[in-house]
Image 1 (cartoon, rainbow, N blue to C red):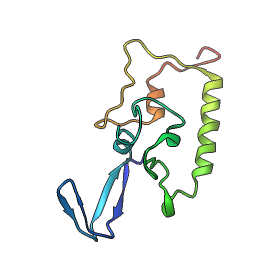
Image 2 (tube, helix red, strand yellow):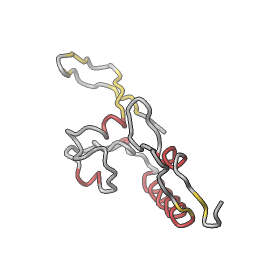
Image 3 (cartoon, rainbow, N blue to C red):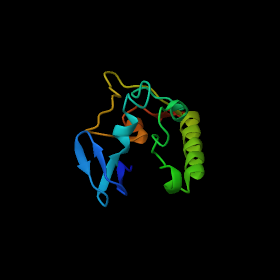
Length: 126
């Protein structure tokens, strides 16, 4: 999982009282960006249409945006749909007792990490 990336500053700017000069490298966090209530309504709720309801362009940074957008975005989305369909058709999923699926910035995990914690039982019972 990629947690963020660096971007070069091309023009001096001020941010929350700090001067950021051109030439610096800034790190942005995908997890924190996608959790900001200023950008997303109910950021802690799963929503496949999340990108359709964002308040700022390029704020959904899973695949980047603009001239740096991932060239494999369409292929990656197709792969995700195929894998999700396979898992949903071939396994029975349930939340374990007392299990929390709450996310935290200190311990990010992927969707597969969440699934690892679920009781995934194949259709044959194994």
